[in-house]
Length: 331
Ligand SMILES: Cc1cc2nc3c(=O)[nH]c(=O)nc-3n(C[C@H](O)[C@H](O)[C@H](O)COP(=O)(O)OP(=O)(O)OC[C@H]3O[C@@H](n4cnc5c(N)ncnc54)[C@H](O)[C@@H]3O)c2cc1C
Image 1 (cartoon, rainbow, N blue to C red):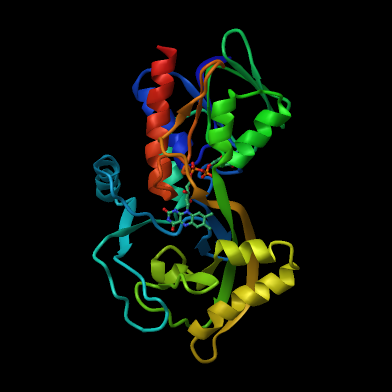
Image 2: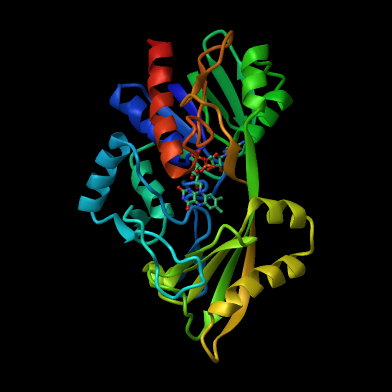
């Protein structure tokens, strides 16, 4: 089956691109290697009733465009304001700055599931090769399936997209390649800690201190998404890079040491799962919200590394822009 547009990646940017294209009457099909949609909008089940957001923890909104959507999600009771700022861990009370930090009922992944409704999405499929054809693009996936579309939107973190293009022997215009190669991501080592007993994280349930190597510790139960006490910890890019190849036991020890100061007397960490994000947040971004490749059938690159905002809002805005750029290219 041929669709108008194939979208690699069903994270925030891929889903917003799909939504914009559908609104402009183009047929779309998404392919994602994950078992669920969402990409870095990731929520993991832990034990009985436990949930942990282990990718994006919350999102902020600066653009009127995204605020319009967020107002709708608030009205649906899908998202809520988790807080207006975090303690740096040194004081018990949180000094808010007044700006809402939004979270999603049932975990960040639920927002992606909501946005994915009604779309044709092939999950658990790694796109293994891309081929430009006379009429557009042909993709092969890890299940041996072929996907055909007139246009292609690529939303994986850029190093992964470039790897796939290179492996497929698809050569970008030199200028496009040079600009896209500048995009860099930082890694993140993430701990998902099951706690027995109480924690003492300042309301509304998280501490953020950019001076610390493990800069984020959050309680998913206080956040309101988990029935049981599950704490998430995140290490910064420098620490994560330096310790990437250390043994899992050593990394876990380091992550646990950042959580322990927040345990109340008698509480203990009963288990820690480690999640390694090779590409967590963009450190170097591309100034425009997406890129339409030169000298190839309609191909648009998008994602949180486009537009200079980064983060969930950057992915959101980039996805919409990519949808428009693709619709204009196909028109
Ligand atoms: C640890 C961590 C903490 C974060 N904290 C925050 C935060 O608090 N606030 C905030 O705003 N943002 C945060 N972010 C960033 C935020 O999650 C991202 O900016 C946003 O989710 C990116 O969306 P995206 O669509 O651009 O990319 P992604 O969500 O990465 O989507 C890309 C998709 O492409 C798929 N894919 C990749 N390669 C292939 C392939 N070959 N075949 C098929 N599918 C493929 C992936 O599975 C993925 O689903 C955090 C991220 C991480 C990892």
